[in-house]
Length: 439
Image (cartoon, rainbow, N blue to C red; front, side, top):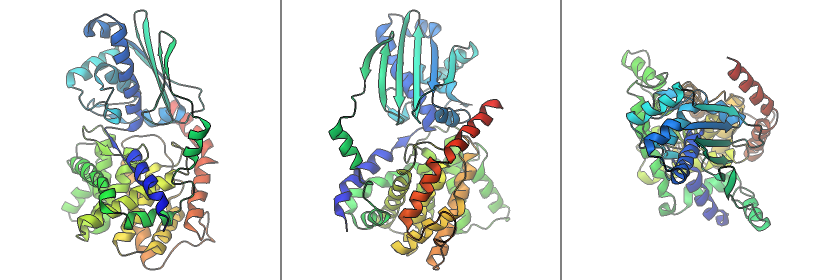
């Protein structure tokens, strides 16, 4: 048992599993706008109302961030897209709230933000940058300007400019720091190490993951009201009520997981517990596990360990891939969920390995064509694939190493999946964005 990874595992889960209000790509733009406005308010002597009358906003984002921000709901606004995110972030965002930057906006704030859009004082374009995740937000008032650049992580500010003069730049990574980064817990760790940590680490060290259940279950209940998006979760519920579907484990997993995504993607004012920078990935890694745990009447410790196994396995799989890609992140997060569900249902590591390989043999290649309400469909499809893969594995059935990209070894299979996401699917990403912007 490789306990030398355990501190690193704990730290990376605390870093990657955090509350996020709304889709993290437009929220990243809103955060940049909020930080810029605080600087601009210090720089410009005008009162808020007078400043807002002169305000103009320019946003440049990477192609991947544009793809994920074009059609997704922005919390509390009733609108979709990056322009409203930038406007309401500038006018009312909390620059200290990270991914919950929009938690305190009001209807009056939204009305003022819509004025900026109506008067065409907000522009959004694609930047020619190497960063997969990149957002530069520049605010102008009279002769003053402040520009905030976020890159590589949704809350990581790398540069601030004031009237074209750099006033802050992130410290360059030193060689010693680079070595520490390379020595991350996943540099030498395996899926077995993840399993052993989640199932045997002291409960007090991992109990914090319980908040994922609390936040994402509340979001699921909100989605079941039927007020959000394509109402995938509510559709399942209505057809249970009509007698067309039974309220069995599979249906309940799809119903409750999709409902959380319905609410989150259509701008509900409730945070999701995210995973790897994505609320949908956090939902996909949480809700199927919660439903199985409740179905089995598992105790608190068992649910916590299953949630830790799910979230950490999802992070482990995602760590092999680019932050944003053409591969739907809900599918990889659901590969974490299948680990948690398989363990809850009595499986050991061999069963978990088989279940992950079953999923990679099943749903690999589902594309990410941007964040939007229909993501709830992909979330529910991935959740249903996960319980199917788990049940097959528990019966001793798995996709073999002679089939497709699946290898006999689970870690090799994960690397094969990631090679596809980071390699050939990069061109798929370009094609997807071309289609989206030409519509």
